[in-house]
Image (cartoon, rainbow, N blue to C red; front, side, top):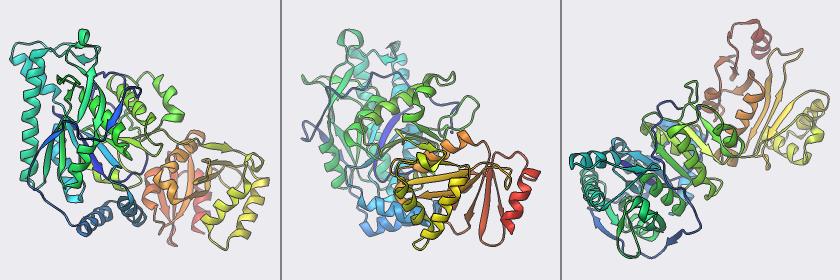
Length: 488
């Protein structure tokens, strides 16, 4: 199966549990940064271009607006249009896809006016060609041993796949440019793996020039040594190096499974590496391709801005992943440190807390906020927030007035939505509170996100929605007093 990576000039966002059946990735050499450099000169890169198809900027914006309107909320549409317009040409989203996904991805990108950078290998096809030629594929530590005959077959195959992609995209009306010599590499270990490369330089200038000229660059994972020899590079490693060179807001792996799944077959919607990585790696079901995928994501994100993220999604969810908060599949991020306190005395900056609540409640709400804080002094609660309080949640436990814990406050700034902090907050809450209820106005622009977090809802006819999760029987006595209070 042809594997490829696509880089899109686009925005970031979002959050969110998928897995059995995750593709087993080939073990790759460890990605290091000590010997890497990113070349701003074209070096020996050259290209073969197809016809140009320009798309007017205002038409591009119109297409994106129409797309977001069909998959997200009003707030999401506004914020991602703004983000898309403000992102520099270097802030790509890198998407790793298989051959069966290339047409879907390319068509979606063309319709949105985005410029993907496609990087492909051809591992399965290469295995078959070698067998047909009477050569048994050999691997050491998961890395293909590439002798001269294997390298020659691989080079011919990669050129053929490039031509196929160029031809197919040209038929779709998409202008492409096939780039060679983008990657420079040293021998990984000539004695052990022969003609296998360890990438040391990425020519990002050639990629950028192609995009600025209106072409979609198509690359393969072959690299060149300083002495002019071609070297084979694992496509996953090449994709990671491209991501490190471009420092994208998002790195997306398109997978038929649609994400990663835990040992019980439940989709993993969010992995917060800072808080979960060590514990996650100890779990018995975190193995094989699943484990490699998470380790690779952690290695990539370690060298990128904290705002970058890795998502594993189904091809049909690409637009939702790029342009909505909820996204799709499994999101992997370095994460945010979430603070958890049970009294006001534990909060270092009460003024910041009050400012956050006032901003959430409205301009004339200082008196109400003061009353609420006085109430918290005498009542049990758990507050969750990040260092800058872009997101603040306050949960009141079950008591005389409620048989189920209640999320009484959830204040989220726009910057919080863009950096996915609400997902981290909600994950922390679910660990402490197996069941929960909360009420949101029916006209809230984030209503879709709340629906995704709930097991069930009720409406009162007065413009509010009661959400709940963790309650096995919604008609049980546990919800009766809560529901009566809600409809009153």
